[in-house]
Image 1: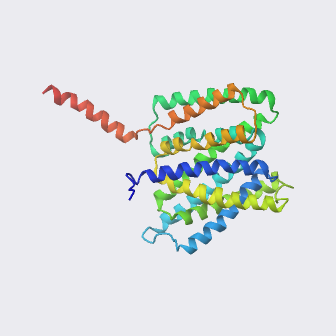
Image 2: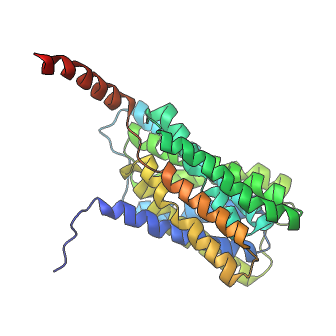
Image 3: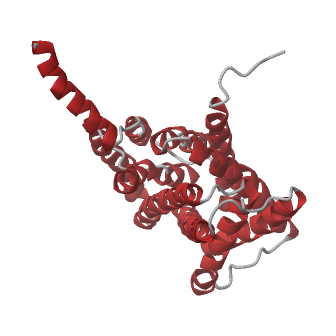
Amino acid sequence: MIKIKDAGQLPAIGLVIGCVIFGLGSLIVAHVDVGGYAMAFWRLAISGIVFTLLAAVFGQKMPVDKGSQANKKAFIFALLSGVFLGFDLALWHESIYAVGPGISTLLNSLQIFFLAALGFLLFKERQTIIQLISLIIALAGVVFIASPEFANNNHAAYGFITGIVSAAMLAASMTFIRLTHQNAPTPIFILMQRISIGGSLAMLIPMFLFDAGKILPNSLAEIGWILIYGTVMQCLAWGLIAYSIPKLSLALTGLLLLTEPVAALFIDYFWLDKPINTIQWTGAALTMFAIYLGSLKPKPFNETLKLRRYRFFAKFYRRR
């Protein structure tokens, strides 16, 4: 009988699997003739129905031992997580249309730096010199990727802007998931239901404003791909991600999310035949290395201050 040495590894494994499946969704986005905001709406609307059914089947409810105020905050935070996820998906879709799945997913993965900033502001996670250096390396990597793309692609600027902004939206969505659990531990299906509701509602107005004429799928095949996109990519992949995030540090979360752009880049190059030259591969390598450095776990301020005080007073005790 095989025993798992460390049950704490399961969230990390689940996050990696979720990210790879999440990245594969870019193939569907690239081949279905539906607008970016509409695609985000359908994905979240379909997943909302699925998670509602799953919550009913498994009898998941909010815990009654928490105060009503805490449950209300958790409800609001889950909806806000969905709002930011909706805009993350929509802008990521727009970036895919402009620069392809590989580069757009790599830009989306810059969320680690937005996560680090939010971790500093909200959770007092101290940033190290290495993490600050990693930001400079990441910027250099993005320049390496962008320079050939801007020379050959008229939509490059739009693709890079939407890709980077989508990273900020994703980081905000992940942070609100953590805040949701801090206020009231929420069962996974209930959490995903609320995220899906918040995101799909947030997409209604942008969808009709920006995707007029590209809201509905044009064939049975496209309907099938959208159903797969909403069930497998959202329910399974994002469900694994949402399950894993509260059990991992924000920094480790960013590190493991690196598996998504790696998969997307290889799919873009080997499957979709997108031309990626040596300079861009170098930029991609630099960016992913920077994301790795930026993912190194920071120390909380309180822990650092206590350690400094201990070392300071220890000097006097050693002199006696």
